[in-house]
Image (cartoon, rainbow, N blue to C red; front, top):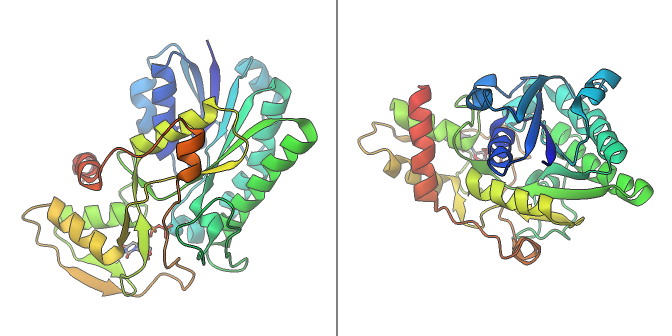
Length: 318
Ligand code: UDP
């Protein structure tokens, strides 16, 4: 029975990973300090013998007794990190610590166990990209002193950390660059565009388009993302891999898609200033590498279907 250790296991993406690895017959240890993750995301897994939830901040070292309790670990997945622009304002130091100290602590567990290590990186490492769509060999355009730097710059640091551990210690590292992902278990109040627009449409409140609404994003449904991550984890690929859905929308177009998905809503589109001037103007993954190294992986869930399933979840949270 493979043992998978997932930091951020009670988070949006981490909780889906826990569920899928348990379905595959693995033993799963989820680690979370609940800064943005929530126990309710994994409450349905509590009864499973192969599942353990440990409350711990991975920015601080694992104690010897914790490591003893983990036993042999085959896969370490470092997915603990708040990822919403409002978190960048609220808890920037926590973000920097989990991406730096947290990355070292989890890499050490992988090294000691000769485990596969996979780190959740992000499309944010491309910054406000000057290459479109973004390929993995593009080095990015990041403002190191901007409002997002606590996140994008430390994710770049965590990619560098994984690379050093691979070169110096031979750790089998994988890097997944996650593009905008949405789905059930996103926090309705996390401030990102999908929960904002969905919550506003469901409540009949104004849909807040920031700036001109001409900036673009490409949205991937969480099930597609998780499938891609699991294939990457099972592979021996050490190069960074973009995982996302190349279906690109302006935020204005996306607002209209959400309005259409909530028939009868009284919401209307209103314009608000951008939260900050580093807001990337365009984003779309080039997934050529993912298709090649992940056995033909590609996203399968359309925006209409994924949004329907997400709205269903958000309705239960209102
Ligand atoms: N956005 C918006 N209205 C909102 C929230 C976000 O127009 O209520 C825009 C935001 O300015 C950005 C895009 O939607 O251009 C995606 O923002 P999000 O915070 O979801 O993620 P990002 O990709 O910027 O990290």
